[in-house]
Image (cartoon, rainbow, N blue to C red; front, side, top):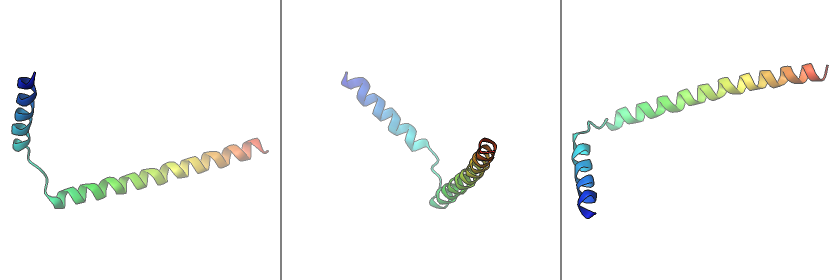
Amino acid sequence: MANWFTRYFRESYEELRKVSWPSRKDTVRDTLIVIGVSLVVAAFLGLIDLGLSTGLQKLVLR
């Protein structure tokens, strides 16, 4: 049982050493892009929700 367990972690470690990790600058840039796009999508969906709820209220209260 311990043999497959140690082999798994040894092989995983060897694979992780082959990974080309992004630089700190790239990581920060990509993170800011994700946050920015998330904010834009949230604002867009919020405006759609506001418009639909206002339209529905006007339709129901008519």
